[in-house]
Image (tube, rainbow, N blue to C red; front, side, top):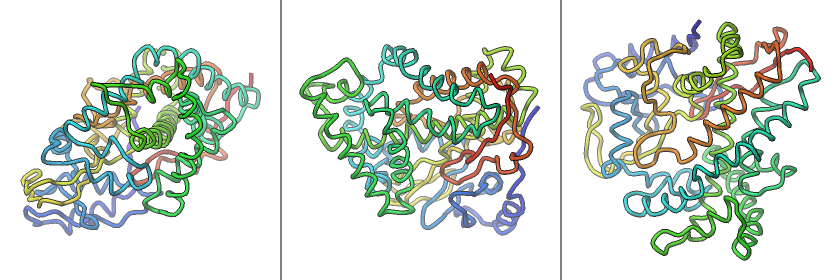
Length: 409
C-alpha cells in the first residue's frame, strides 16, 4: 500500500497558475503557517516551473533534487556562514556555520566523539534500556499516545545520557531544545533557553576537563587534531547544537515512521514478521517525511541555480524536503512505499556538512521501532482519537499525537 498527501492542492494550483510565464526569475512563495503547514503541493508546483526557485522574504528556495545537491556540494559558491546569523545566535559558535579549512578541522575534532565503538556501546548500555523503560511504562495499559509517552522522550533521554545529563533532567532539556530550535520565531525564549542550557552544562564540562572519563563528553572536551582542541565557544556551540538537533529531529522522524506504519497496517504486519524490513522503513520515511525540510546557505558571488540568476549575498534555503519528492529522481514521490530501488536522499544533507549524527539517528530508529513492535502486539491507531494524528509543519515536520491501542502485556 501507499500513502499520498493531498492537502494544499488549491494553493499549489494557484501558485502554478500565477507563475505561468514567470521566465527565468524566482516565483513568490505562498504564505505559510510554520507549525501546521502542508508545503509539499506548493513545492511540487514550483518544481514544474521554468525557474524552479521560490522567493520568500528575500530568501531564495531551491526545490529540485539536482539543484539542491549541487548547492550543498559547492561550499565555495554557497556558504554556510549564514547559519551564524540565524540559528547561530541561539546556539553559539556553530560548526554548521563554518566553511573550508576551519570546518574540516573542527569537524574532525567532533567526529572522534562519534566513533563506531561508541555507537556500539550506546546501543546496549543506553539506547535499548531507554526505549525499553519507556515501553515498560505503557505496555500494561493497552493504550497510549506514542508521541507524548515515547517519541518525545526517547531521543531526548538518549542524547542526555550520551552527554551525561541525569535522566530526571531530560524533560527540562527537551523544553530548552524546542525553544532553541524555534528561537527565530520567539527570540527572547530562544536566548533564555540557550543561556540556561550552557549554565547547566558548564559543571559537567569542567568535571570532565579535570577528571576525564571514558565517555562522549570527555572525548569532546579533550579531542585534539594537530594540537588543536575545541575552543570554549565552539564546545558549547556544539553541545547546544547536539541536544536540540539530535533530540528534536530524531523524535519527529520516529513519529513519522510510526505514522507511516500505523496508516499502512498491511506493511506494519509484514514488518512485525520480518524485521529485516526496518532499514527500508527508516530510509523511505527519511525520504518521504524528513523531520527537517530545509538547509540554509548564502551565495558568495553572482551565480545561478537551474538557470535562475542569484546575486551575491542572496540567502538560500535548500528545500531538502522538496528535493526528496522530486519526480525526476523518485517515482511517485508523494507515496510512502517500501521496496523502492535504493537512491540517495537528502534527509541528512550532503557534502561537507552532511549530518554527523546520522548513524546515531538510524541506530535509535532501528532499535526504538524494533522494541515497540516487540512489546506492543496488536498495535493500531485508536479510531476514537485518530483524527488529530497527522504530519504537519513547515521547516520541522512530525505528528503532534499518535493515539494507539494494543494488546496489554
